[in-house]
Length: 116
Image 1 (tube, one colour):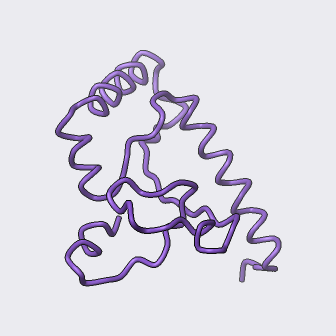
Image 2: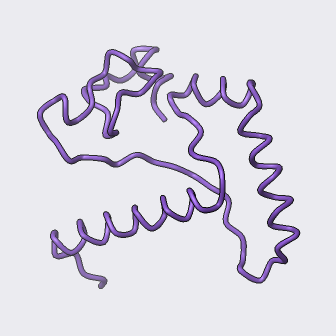
């Protein structure tokens, strides 16, 4: 999350590796707009727990996370940094992980990267 550094002038953003423009940096084009289509390397974070955690505990965690995501102060803090909250819910998060694993697996394979 570099929006504060860009706004301060410490770095210059030439493009965002995201499918759409970053809200906090509306004048920064996407990689596609800059002539490099197909580049999507957004960062994200989430909360993971063991599959052994009881369902009732997971439900409480999900409720707490959902409430936190709805907090205007939290949303403002994310926006200030150039970030946004993702889709709420465990299925959306699981889908995001699956999508990213497939994407980066293809990149690694195409680049011929091997574990040493």
